[in-house]
Length: 154
Image (cartoon, rainbow, N blue to C red):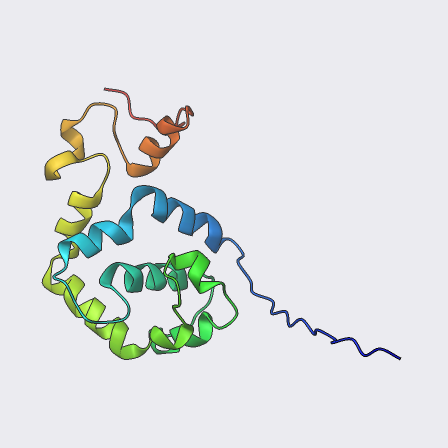
């Protein structure tokens, strides 16, 4: 009787839930890339933009977990797909990484970063100077040809 090599495939279940939509929007507006462009080059494994996205996902993950438990939150999630970083693991998002990111965000004034990151405010101008552009959400809707119901009239 001929012996054949039996191959055993191992499968792992990962939950994407609604975070796939959030990741797509963050990727479309280039949030991580924008933050990384503002930060000085670093030898850290996880960039400021990637760590910020991870904290956003945790905040929108309908869990009441503290940030130091972030690796636990991402254990059953497809991190490479959500964050767009090959080889990233849940353990990489430890409290040291998140602490450095939060310190960087504080030092660079989150309000100013937000105004520069907003697609409605090129060059950091106030959104009120741009007629018809009330939010980044409206811009995404317009890009897709959908009119916002909450659009302000001037």
